[in-house]
Image (tube, one colour):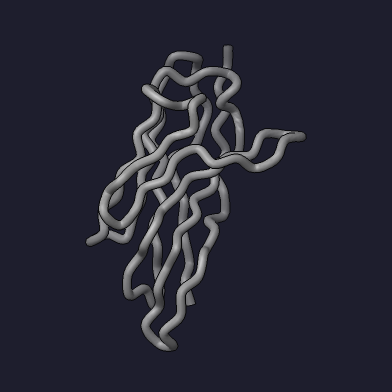
Length: 121
């Protein structure tokens, strides 16, 4: 089984910074893509950033230049560094990892439990 643990959310003033982490535990052989999504109240979940196993990154337009996604494969962890936060960034942030497990040999996408980010104006 695979279990993801997120941390780093909280309350911050506009213009501030936060760093989110998402670590994978369990029978993890390797992790392909790592992604961050967010969901604001009354809105659909949307992709924020993604990073491939080769380190290639992609960002939603609304976070370009402010957020940075990175990964540490040795720690099986993905990070989201967020700067210049805006009130409209307020949402629950979820990590989504494409995980290959060893026994049995399977591949599947797993979600974190979500972490609340609240940006006050």
